[in-house]
Image (cartoon, rainbow, N blue to C red; front, side):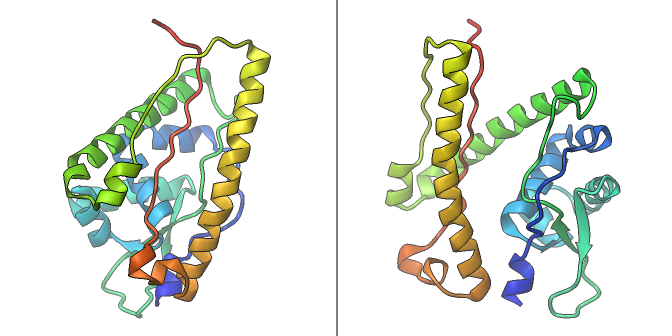
Amino acid sequence: MTEQRMKVDDGPAPAESEEALKCMAHPARMRLLGALRVGGVQTVGELSAATGEAPGAVSYHLAQLAKVGLVAKAASPDGDKRKSYWKSCHHATNVQPDSADADVIDAFSRTAALTYQMAYERFLDVLPTLPQEWAQTCGANDRVLRLTAEETRAMVEDLNAVMHKWEQLSDAHRAAAERGTGAVADKETAVEPVAVVQQVFRWVP
């Protein structure tokens, strides 16, 4: 049962359509999609409990996401057809400059920015209750650098290379979780979801 509930489709994310970007330009839908991508297959009830959204609202938003191919219904791991299981269709969102009109991409980007802020605020809410090793490890910082456009592109490539290294380790932990082995099964070295938000942009005072 663990393997089925953890599994998320591993195919590369296609360039999102204008309809998909419009659908995701909603904080509740973006959060539900993120919850499925991180947590794997879940029921409407589980998503409702995790996000605080009413079950009816969760079902409605999932139906909208399904219409544009972002989520899909999943088979019940235990054969219980009374519960509605859902899964995300891809691990990531792929937005290209020609994916949609500029105003659609702008609305999506602003929703994403708000979602990042809300996620960090949820972390701050639970920070006092976290184990000391997590409370001392997590945090946020920012820097304003003086760079050319070419230097900025090079920096982003360097940052992406670093993230690729840790994504490989994350993928190994995911595979171990599906097998029920590795650090995920060891309470002393438990693996937890860790959000890394990378934003590089021209500074505006």
